[in-house]
Structures are given as structure tokens and as C-alpha cells.
Image (cartoon, rainbow, N blue to C red; front, side):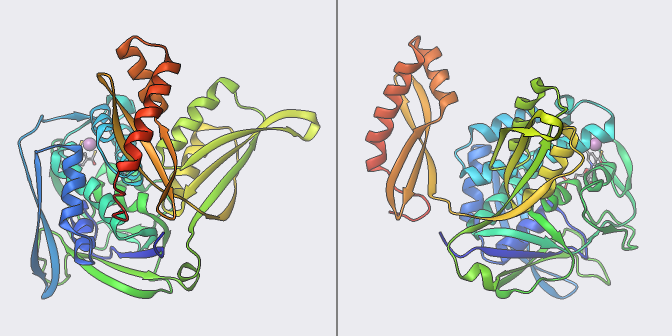
Length: 406
Ligand SMILES: O=C([S-])c1cc(C(=O)S)c[n+]([C@@H]2O[C@H](COP(=O)(O)O)[C@@H](O)[C@H]2O)c1
Ligand code: NI
């Protein structure tokens, strides 16, 4: 595993999805990686370009997205499906999913509808998919494991949208920020400085808010917004660096969030675990415990990367009856892993391949794909599983590792 990299975003001039993507490209992420990830989600429909521009005399990268005309609306379900089907590194898929889930929840709250009834308009268009997936791919490529940001400048006035000339801060932006712990301010300028997509990305990536933390700088970049304002450079800046601690061990920092619960209807637990995974937790589980007064209860635990900690806290608070959590930082030793797909008869099965020191040590077909293959082929699940493992082991030996090239 490479040295973990910390990022700090300067959003004192606002934030938008394309500005974040521009900043990460300016700091060293490649258009090739971004383009491939975006193409995996919406094949053949989006092209991402980068242009070097000036904002108030400062050099910055502006991102342009050329997208084929798509359907005017995309449901949250449609976007979820596009992400689920895409051949993406798992971390990129999970993070992009969390961003869109946040947007869906904010839209649902702003319009007073159920999350599953949300139809994205501007934010579901292909350029927003490019921004979200592009940023998540760039973060992955740069090896960013944790991020912080300044308070977000929101702007004021009115902005054009499918709902007419909506007030700034946009309703979805206010919903996104509510309860997130992220500080925000108007900043006084009469423009929309922070868009829903930009804020959703920032909240998903960042676990800390404030001035630049102590870092050994390795790169910096600036991403341009569309307008060139008179007094303020309309850019998001990113600073990448390592911390003294991160330089030493080849491990990732993560947090385990625990809560003891004795009064939740037990039928709800499976949904709680699902929601935590959707929020970006890498794992979520229950341990049966005996609590005070001899009450049978459960300890809920969620393991999560630092950037998704606020979303995980929020999910535990919203979905369970707990009135508090315990959190402890842990070192996470993670094997390199990637997905490949094997054919089992007419069906396709995704397979997770894990390596230790570049040697394949585990090959595991995705169980849901195995069940789907069994149904499609009309064979027992145990037979589909055996055939998937055999196909996967055969393929694994010939497979190239995407991340290390061996
Ligand atoms: O598309 C919808 S439903 C939409 C909702 C809202 C709400 O606040 S509700 C706001 N907007 C505006 O559309 C653009 C999209 O910006 P992104 O960068 O997030 O794609 C922006 O001006 C929003 O304020 C759209
Ligand atoms: Ni809306």
C-alpha cells in the first residue's frame, strides 16, 4: 500500500463538483483515470476535458464535460444501478454511491418526498455523474485517505434551476449541511458559490473542518469555477500532504463506531446494516451482549474510513434508538484487491481477487451474482458457486493487477 495522503480543500470561494475535479486534476490526478471511471458508469456518453485558465490572475484547471443528450430525469434508483454495474474500484463505487445518496436524501427533504421518489434533474445529468465519479476516481488515484476543508462559502441571491429562480443557498445545499457538522457562511457575494453536488462531495470526503492541518506538502492544485469574479479568485484549492504518522506505517486510518442498543425492534437491524454500508461504512455488524439489568441487547459496530465518519454517525442516529456512540481510531491493514468478471455459462459473475505482496491469496465470487447466475442457468446455487470458483481461480492466475501492474 502506498503512503496515505491527506487532502485539505480551501472552499473559501465556494465549491462545485467541477471545481473539485479541476483542483484534483491540477494536483496530479490524470484525465485518463477520470475518463475511464466516468466511461465505466455511462459508457460512450461523456467526455471530460481540462483547460488551463486564470481566475483573478491565478492559474487553475477548468473542467469541461461534453455529454450526449440523456433522459431529462434520472431517478436515484437509475443512478444506483449505473454505479452498481460499472467496472470501478470498489472504493470509487462506494464513495460515488454515498455522494448520490446524500444528494437524494437532501432533494427528498427539500421537496418533501420519499428518497426513492427523487428524480434528479440538473444533479442527475451526465455532467454531475462526471463530476461525482471523476472526483471519486481522482481521490482514489491520488491515494487520499482523509480530507479536511475550510468552512464553505455559500453565496447569496438567486440561481436558475428546474424549479425556477431558487434562493441561494439552494434548499438542497441547506439540507445537505444540516446536521453534518460542517461550518458554512454566506460570504457576502451575490452568486451561488456552493452547489449541491460540490457540497455533497465535500461532506462525503471530509471528516474535519478548519484551517490547513499540519502536513508535509506533496502537491497543490486549483480548480476553476465558470465565472471569473472581480475581487475573488473563483477557485477551489487543494493541498495534498503526508502527516508524520502517515509516513511511517503502511496502514490506513479508520474509525470503529460502536453503540449498545437494547430497545430497537430487532426486525429493523438488517436495514440498519444496509444503510450503514450505503453511507460508506466498509463493514457493519452486530454482537449480542447482555446489558445492565440483565437485558439482552446488541452492540452495533461500523468500521469506516475517516471521510465517511459524519455520514455513519448520522445514519446510526437516524436509524437506531441509540442516544450516543463510542468511536475509536484503528489501523486498518488492507490487502490489495480488485474485481474481475468471469463467465459461468451465459451468466457473468464478479469476483473479488485479493493479493498480499502481489501474490493472489484469495479469490471470492460475489454471492449475489452467483445466486443470479443460478437463477439464470436454472441450476442449484451450490453448483453455480462451485463453477464460479473454478472459473475465477482459472482467470485469477492470468489476471493483471490494475493497481500495481503485475
Ligand atoms: O435539480 C434539482 S432538483 C435541483 C435542486 C436544487 C435544490 O436546491 S432543491 C438546486 N438545484 C440547482 O441546480 C444546479 C445544479 O448544480 P450542481 O452542481 O449540484 O449539479 C445548481 O444551481 C443548484 O442550486 C437543482
Ligand atoms: Ni431540487
